[in-house]
Length: 282
Image (cartoon, rainbow, N blue to C red; front, side, top):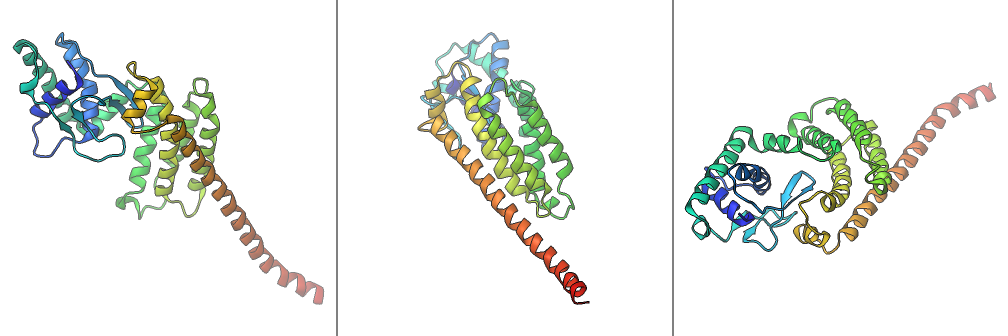
């Protein structure tokens, strides 16, 4: 059973007046594979790991999700009536899809995503999910009056990401990791800490890493197919743009720190010089 056939069943069985979110569809397709296989139905739903879990490859199918950065609604060109399968297969597929949707209704998108991350190939992915939640909470209205905006817990998760990062498997990303670490440490140490800025640093670093993750952790998809799925001309060019952004931020931070140090020295001199003059004159 193909990706668009399973999607047609999911959309047909989905019980809500609100349209199915794109992120939810990708996760439902991931879990539907196991449910369909338990019904002895062969499925062809290639997926790849990316920034926030797995994505189903939809290029060349009748399922349209709008790509990585597009918020367009999910649309499938075929309906259940277009599925050319034996009635028994369709009935079993409906059972499998209903079980998948029941899990979604019970757990919600966040709970379903947490369950997906139990299958993540690297521990660092689970730690990134934690920091993503922490930064999102810290940047929310409910935390704007909080004194530390969850700085302590966020700092611990930064350490966990550094310690768990698979540098042996991804040695060319170690410098990027260190730049991200320095940016985050400087931001978290600042008296003017801005969670929104920390989110920007983290998102760029994580997308950089996940572009390579997607190429390595997938169901037999080529680099070219991943590029199509993410609407990219070149994964390598996208990586270089992201690396350049991280380096630019680090240079900006270094210049800002130098200005702050100079201002601090001037302020200190302004306090010390009157006393020196007094002693000399006295």
